Image (tube, rainbow, N blue to C red; front, side, top):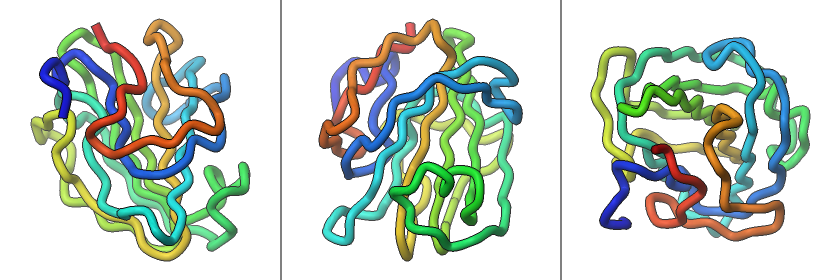
Length: 156
């Protein structure tokens, strides 16, 4: 884990970045956001890590379909667990586990640290991270990332 992890946005999963897009995020950020989607292949570690220091302000679980996780619509239609984290800088991050089965071990009110384990994904996996447009992003579609190690952006 990087020494200055408290100020960073770290990859929450091992895998390949399949999309970096601009879109509206209505649930937690409630406005324009950048979505970074990471596809976890069968050989990737499926343990997920917290992307940024802060306090969990939002957690929501939603049953859903079981579409192939690399498809764009999987972010909307598949089973998912969502965590909204407020970083000490005031920036908010939404971390969305998208899969056939998700396990999440944190809830609203918990204090979390970048790089900590928080859950895992089973059966066709994808992890989406939504951040406000002010957070500069360092990853691009096609990049390979490692959970708790790859720096995806700077939070402060």
